[in-house]
Amino acid sequence: MFVKILIAVTIFLIIFLSFVPIYWTFVTSISLDRDLALTSSHWFPPSPTLKNYVEILTSPVRGVAYEFRRTLVNSSIIASFTTILTLFLASFAAYSVERLKVPFRKTISYLVVLTQMLPPIILVIPIYLLFGRMGLLNHKMSLVIIYTALNLPFAIWILSSYFGRLPVSVEEAAIIDGCGYFEVLWKIVLPLSKPALFTGGIFVFLSAWNEFLIALVLTTDLKAKTLPVAIAEFMGRFRTSYPLMCSAGIISMIPPVIFVVLFQRYLIEGLTRGAVKE
Image (cartoon, rainbow, N blue to C red):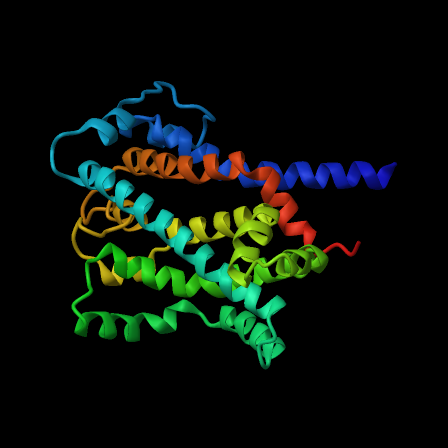
């Protein structure tokens, strides 16, 4: 009984400590600048207001609020296209590794996972020089290509783990009936692999949505600038509007939270299916 209580208390503390920064960000976002000094002694602002959200969503003046709205659209486009393209390519690669007689397929699987140990920061300068010589700086598609390349190994690993647990007999029966490998993948394997697809999609979407360093180096104007870069630019040289910055942070959290909540069931199943022996 004592062990169960200790586990429950530990879980509660972890959840509490995880949500305190989010709550504090929200409290700051509904505070006035003059009330920020009081947040150290109050858990709620004395004069809560939504003017920061109104300003950041409706301000017609070209500034950080205007740029935030533009970059919100850019990040949505980049993250969505990255997710779709990554899952499309990862499906073919994972199916080839798990089902087709590809030479050295086990070695390929290990190398795919090994690439995830490479820190992306060491790739920034080569990527910048390469895309600069090709004239692909300040393009949303450039970020889509880079994010797809960086997230593809993880998506392949997720899908190949799941494909390996699917019954081969169903695929063999479809091949005997005259289906090709592409039809088997499209009509049988992928419909049965929705949990893995949604799991990989969530991780890829969040990775592309939150990526900062590469977007900072490769983009300089609003044509391709992403949300994390725009939020960082809320910090001015002489003055920083912390309530406005926190409002931007809260708004930027909403799409990923909705995405995770809608597909939570698939996320849990996709993460546990490949790890449990039946």
